[in-house]
Length: 398
Image (tube, rainbow, N blue to C red):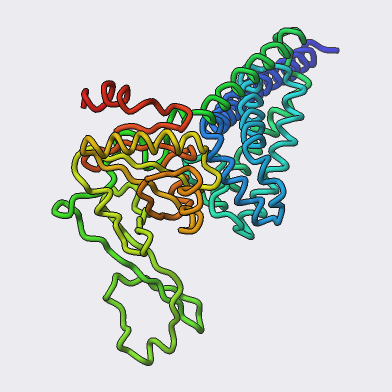
């Protein structure tokens, strides 16, 4: 081999080595980014559902009803905790590169299943929001599906790199760490179920004012969309500025959709409270000045009876001191009368939608303290205290 051929061979060899090195560095960087991205998203998704296991259980119950599997309802809370834990721990082991060969297979299986499931949800829309990020971030079913499609890319990167990813820990240490994280996270979920979520993402969280002052409210705009029957073209109009008096136009176009543009920051706008005679008393209860207690029990027959008894005594003392105390429930009047007779309750009941009540406080029953329309605090029935202690600790320091 001549010197010139040797130089050409060495040059090509060096080029291929450099290319291989660049590809290796690129894949390592891509693997690192994929691991961080997938790990953090899975941990965040599992965490926001895990700290609100009852809220995620409500979402699972919606699916059980749609799928005709109501027999699974009693397992909703257990499944909520297990699924949240699975998601959080899987994100943790991926983020910290524990057992990459095993975790990459698990990740691929999970992503394949949920991508197919969310595609079905996007097509059929059985439940408007699957709750993949709990109540922290609300996504449509199509947004959830595209999110999973996007996550499938780093998932495939992690799976393709699994044989080259070295275990940083021994089996004992890796599985031990995963076991400890699993135990701690389940403990967190159970704590939040027994009490209340440690972070509240709902409208009815501490510090929110539950109505907008009339004099400071901005005008609300109402829009309607009409579709051309022949071409399918859609046009949106700001009410009342659409040709409803044009009979020819109205014969060619049909109503398609409507939306409301409310520039005001409204919390709890979906709450409507009626008395047992059907009269709307929402403003009377929410806008009453001073301290107001609202006991929420979305179903009186499923409520903790000791909690109702404790609040019955609490309410008598609070009313005696001049504070308002009402109970909101979605139960029928006959059910209210039944539980009131059984427990000899003197509570003042009003009715509201059960879905709204479940968003107000994650307990049955749960207590809300409001002052001048602002949520001051909330408690689960497991954390109820005697009125005297409550008054000394809270009402005196406001």
